[in-house]
Image (tube, rainbow, N blue to C red; front, top):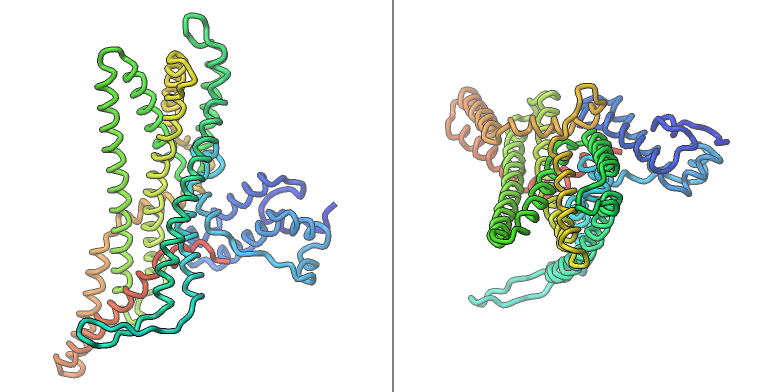
Length: 451
């Protein structure tokens, strides 16, 4: 018996729920009450904080044991506090979720961005602020901060260490995904008939398993888009392999597939760069607008622009996730299909099953009655953000500046004074953008840590 069930009730789970059920409960409630879905709703914001606190306690075995024994009030008396929500965990819910674990694992690019920011913050709070004097070519003295010099070296070391660690993690991740894929295929592959055909019963079981997995995956945040991306890769890799096995044209098919793969990678990189540029440009325009309105912007407009910026950033995150999915699954498919320990017949059969998997993922869609409203809020933010152009926000900022200039001209009777004030306003916008863009990623990530 537990002393109280308050935290379990907040997550909508029973007091005997296991770790997976608790995580699912948190995911559902966090998405439902996230501030970006409920802008300006103080009650929802408070509820989100309660959900985050409940999860931080119940997901920690030691804290959960203490809570079960003494309750929340007893925990406070013992000085046990809940930690902040890990933004990496929240982003893993937005892009992926449990429904994709067996197919893409845990997306790591966003986590890497967060780790990089944390490392940078740690660097900025350490070091010797002493200075050294360096003589320049014109004989003048220029003081350079030793801390900056050390920080540069540290960043290089961290980058090198990170790349090595990333390679090891990706290798382990690919090996694990290969193992999971083969486990799904093995019941079919081990019952192949003498003529090379699949056993009908096992093939039906395989298709039923895929249908179940896909129907679960589409309910995740960005689930349909991710399914289509996975399906596209599976189909391309499976079909390309079968074509490459043809005696006469196989070599040409391999070359063509390689070129197409390179084009697809280039498109993904371009999409990532374009979305990042769009987000940065919008951030700059919003900084200009904020410094030009002199507090005249109402709460609705502020919430609207905040949601726009969140949507722009999520678009960048999705582009990076899509790039990562392509890179990881390409490696997985390569290991599965080019396994030299297996006969060419077995590898062709693997390719055929991979194509079947690709068809299920490529045709994935949500039913009208699917309970996925909470997970779709971030997809909606991205769609709406695409409709907002940075140039329109800039036009509004310049319009505000002109209005202030006209007002000052009328009031003071001096165009020069008005121009001076307008110039100062523009300078303020530039300064605001400089400060904002420097910490843009940090500020955007912080929107997911409102507790």
